[in-house]
Amino acid sequence: MALIKCPECGEIISDQSDVCIHCGYPFKRDNERLIPVTFRRVKSFIGCIVPLHVAVDGNSLPDDDYTIRLTPGTHTVFMDGADTSCSDVIKVPENATGVTVLIKLSNYFNFFVDETRFQIVDVEVY
Ligand SMILES: [Zn+2]
Image (tube, rainbow, N blue to C red; front, top):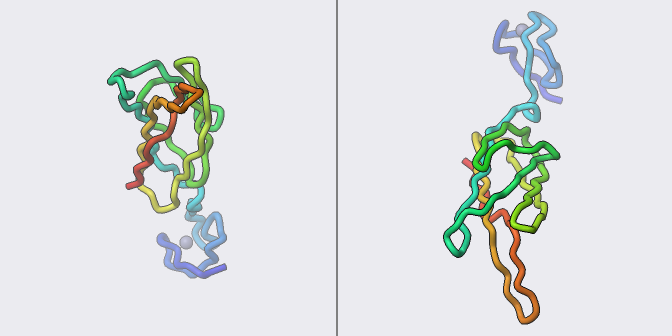
């Protein structure tokens, strides 16, 4: 626990307080800070964009490229489309002002399997 100065009345209070005990000023905790996270599809190796359904923490996103606001921490991303589905996690850092998540349809070739799946290829934190 640390002591901080209330930005409203200047009194010293605990940083665990939800409100200032002197003036009632409400404090928002860091983990309640919502950070804009944009989900963006990138072109596949053959240069096309295929239909992709994305859900974050079980909540379906309405559009292909879409920005939602998430709390810092780990979130589950479910990607479904082109006869393939998978899930991955993204981490939203406490100090981020925004995050862009790039999702790509990738092919994996090996001797026996020609597999196509969606994948988070990049997470840009700014
Ligand atoms: Zn105060």
